[in-house]
Amino acid sequence: MMKKILAGALLGLALVAPAHAQTVNAGTYNVEGTNLDGSAYNGTATIELTSETTCSIEWHTGSTTSNGICMLYGDAFAAGYVLGDAVGLIVYNVQGDGSLHGAWTISGQDGSGTEVLTPQ
Picture 1 (cartoon, rainbow, N blue to C red):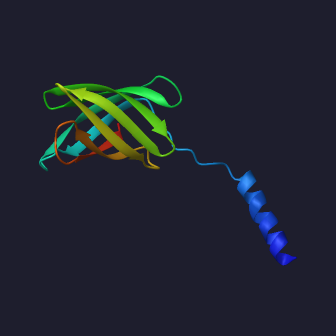
Picture 2: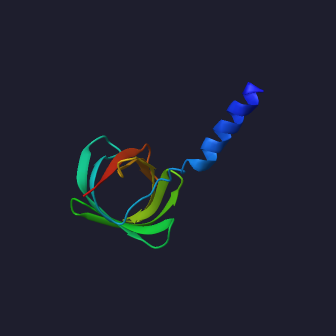
């Protein structure tokens, strides 16, 4: 009997407690990352929301600008982009503080780089 009461109470808490959905906000982010060779880079990225789960993103790192599309799925945030003649992919994990921590790669290249976007 006690197990049923406890199970009912836990179920009730699960239904009443709000779900903590991760979100990505539109705006400008500071960029800090590592290239495929391990060297560091920094700059800014601007995210523009196009729906509740999709967006456009533009990175400015050094003298390079790249544009892409992005999508939020749970606490994963992914972007596909074009860099010169290559196609790139980055997958971020959305953090509770609004920052994005990710790993990226470019078609035709070995390895992956890292990147952190922090809201300004």
